[in-house]
Image (tube, rainbow, N blue to C red):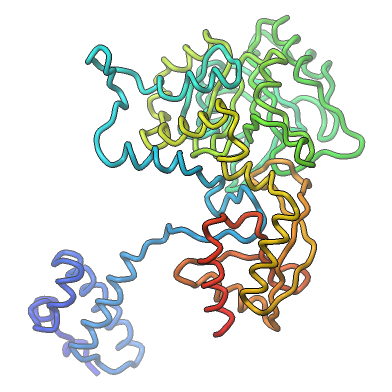
Length: 449
């Protein structure tokens, strides 16, 4: 077998059978695919394979180009029971939020245009006033995510200065995101106070120096301190900060605007509670318990927010029109007191147990297999660790649940389930109501294989 016998790229692209390749992918991408495939063929020949025909090379190049264009980001059905599933895109958006995004994406918009004056406007106007009205804050600012919000605040107020934070809050969350590393990137110096399980107000007070700029409280995210533990309450930190002319930055993370305890969960600190406790600056996420798009939301005293708004870093972190459209629509649900009915995250949290049982039972009846069992759903997304909601699960009959789970993942509309006690189970809490038929179609396809 000889490498010299392989046809050239020019010969391949000029072959009559290349018409389909060029027709499907255009000349430029077709040439890239042919060059890449020829290199693969050379490696195969060196390993002892036979020389391919021209037609074989063209077919393989077509397959290669198809793989390049195959979307890696596409919808799935979340049947895991994890409501805010970070790996699956966190919070699904309400119908109004989706329609708002489509509306501004379909053409031009008033992103930075004032219709009244006919002059340039500000993108801040679209969501900031809604945030302030809902939370009771003097002012608000939206950036691209909560890590960006913390980075901006620390850069603006504590660069080359010290920030005090309890050792109990030096967390790492998904993706290797660590609070100490964000502090470092901002140019602020981290000063750890207290111990890994107990921090007292005196620890903060004793650590204050003429270089201290802020005291930071960070949400514990995906872990919980239990046992012999203590931390100063937020009002205590605020009072201490005021006494020393420092800023208190409260990183709430999950961004709850409603009381989770009303649904049988533990109490997640709300944004309103932080502001009422006197925190001058509160940061939280838009795509967790708020139920909106990815965004970092900052609320608090007007003077502080304005300094952040004018900081050069704010431009690098600003949200785009799609985020602002979806966020504004989501916030309006809260203003209209309709979040439980319209925001999917809260629909799922508030789902009655008997309704979940009926849905799981209807799936079993349609599939003619499986059994209903009691289970637990979780909130996820770093919110309410170790907290869960009772649910009903459909457990499917399968001697090899791992293989069944793999088949479900490879459907045209993938179904993501979980394996529990050796069974593949599906939780109706996180399957959107309009996905039931697609779910059943996919299950029937996978079970028959």
